[in-house]
Length: 262
Ligand code: PEP
Image (tube, rainbow, N blue to C red; front, top):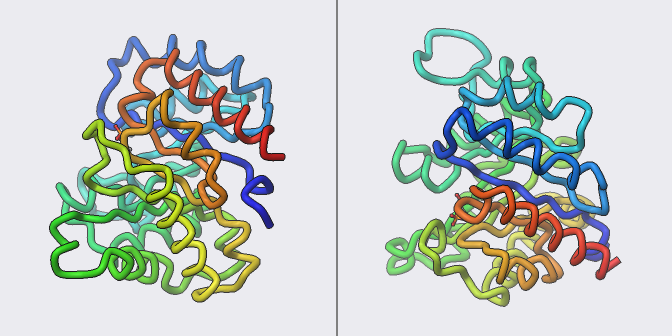
């Protein structure tokens, strides 16, 4: 299967940005474009507080809503956490798991990423499993070793069938929010390595069907370079997705790049 056969996924990550009164106008601006469906899937990850409203606003549209994190337990005494079961019940579609900021600032371990990935799948949410490369770890370990370790542990116990609902995001830590993206060639090399690792962990079919996203200072200027790479099937975008005009441009680019390679 070539990259052209995997449908691109454009995902915004609002983090804890966006005031309550900005949510509806943003969505109303983006929905008509997404509904044209010219070949890319589009989703927005937002803080929990907005998710129910966002699901309602986007009902019947092609714009999907994502959580930025979820606990690995459905119910119980976990004050301040979000239940994956509740997310699924209110209509959230995707969940980011192991985002670099979660790993770095909230001590998210590979083992917890694995538990959260399994819990998301059990509840019918589609996890986007984030793999990152930390520059400080470079000194000690080969970067491929770091990414492979994260990938292996995150996917432990996840079946080939379940992998149909999993996407991987490759995000070099130094590129996130820094304004310094990886080069498209660097990103493609890592995506290719991740895909080959999926062949080794599962089989060619799973590797061929799994979407691999690049994230880290994607802009309207560099998005086409990433999206035209063979093994990069989407983009995870923070800062450049905060303005609807810029997110719309990124969607257009993904649609054009997708249809050009079909
Ligand atoms: C991110 O938060 O995953 C991200 C890639 O952010 P930015 O696009 O701002 O680098």
